[in-house]
Length: 297
Image 1 (cartoon, rainbow, N blue to C red):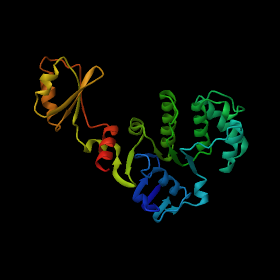
Image 2: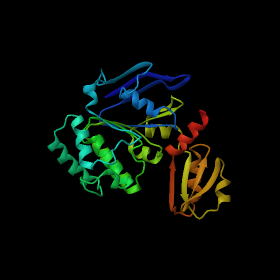
Image 3: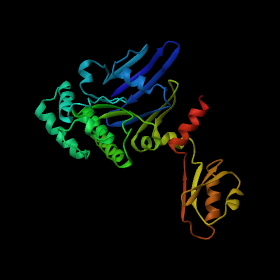
Image 4: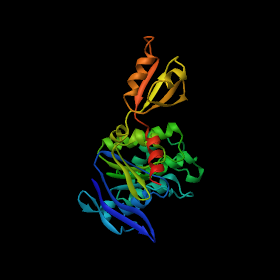
């Protein structure tokens, strides 16, 4: 378990991380989100002891993060670190050996991961010959070849199409199910929502939201209704508490003043006895992110 207590880091007159508390349990995924410059990468670098915090405490299973502890960490940096003129095999085995793996064992793991992630290319290919997406997969392999029990993933899905993003997400979920503690950052809010158990949102180094991701969403109320109905906008907008109506796909998304208005909308659209689609839900994480960022400028 990773525990961060009251961590603060300042660069000159700028506070990059301000009194941060965060816990990442074994077998769980923490999504760390925020605008560029919010303090996400600085937090990762303090966890890894690349930079020192000004105050506070960071521990793994109740102890400081020493070099021995770092051997069990997998880190995927936002700035990718593959050597373009080396072969896939050369550098993956090099990274594996740095974490104490035997070459033969690492080579077998590499072949397994090449198949799992459907990497297009051979282990004897140089990285510079790979597509951006396949190079990203190789970087991911380098991060977890040594079977880490703690993973830090900084923008892991950059450069990947939806199919390959889903492929990596499934592997991250498997690592979680096998007991790894995982923390990752992403600007893709739908991905964060799908993958995370818990969420920490930073704004200018401060925590503005933290907790169970579904609890956070529900705390904003079920103030959105998606409906597919033949009723005209004018009929729906006449219902007290309907704020806005916008077209969305085959239906319409209705923003309402409070949850009770949803009952009135359902009553109206079901008068004919059949409703094609009706879903009342809280705001998406993307909408919450935009709202919180705007309010904490």
